[in-house]
Length: 354
Ligand code: BGC
Ligand code: ZN
Image (cartoon, rainbow, N blue to C red; front, side, top):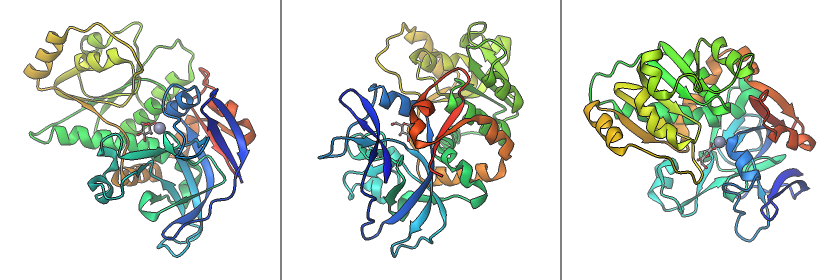
């Protein structure tokens, strides 16, 4: 079969021939339909993050946003022909309590691999094997868009954590603000704008019109905030103080400034992972603002099965037109370089195996 493999020296990305995997006992064989590309993939391929090969191998098959079909159930409880999407993390120690409770997204570093990111092969291959506990069913009507489940599950986890952090009182959020108009930001905005939780949504970018991300933001009913004109600390006076911030930029200043955009009792979740970057920070003002306004700043990484299921629910209810507006390119295996390209016209790109 064909697969897209990263050879970390270089780094060098190649389409290679590999043996089709044989499912072990307890695993099913999945035929891949398509794999989405996100910022992590681009950084892995550029040698910036992850890319660690599985033990004893010289390459890493990339791709962690996959949808496929059960080709061979191999005696598991799965049914052949079912459309599925796989979770990202696998335990390095099967006895870990996080593996047992299905909460690997909360496990400490060193106790798991992330398929396609570090330590375990990903899904950008014609076939992969997987245990049913790491698969979530996708309705057939959304098979074409199933690669959205993993990134959408990040938003679901973040929302879950945000609401949990405010569960100590009668929280009545009205507005949500997404930082960043990359693929996760726009998908998150689409979820927040079409969901029940918030009446107002905003999305931060730094682009001039005409621009496809601004068109998308406004198309789903969000308000575009240009960070070059309105800094985060000016958001409360220029627009309104928001109840929830979903950060996706990985820009460390945003972690701090997000709290400025929040109103009293607001909560921000941070998902972007910065590289080495230092910023100047008025720690006293940040500390005071968090305390006297009951604000919360939460880091959120990865996601687990219930978040995937919530994402599947959302995907099943949202219009396919909205999803089509997000997908700016579907590419074959031989065009993976184009799929990884990130131009201003790129929203979401996908590698398709069909
Ligand atoms: C993935 C997460 C992963 C994180 C850190 C993200 O792109 O979607 O599942 O935990 O990167 O590697
Ligand atoms: Zn990702």
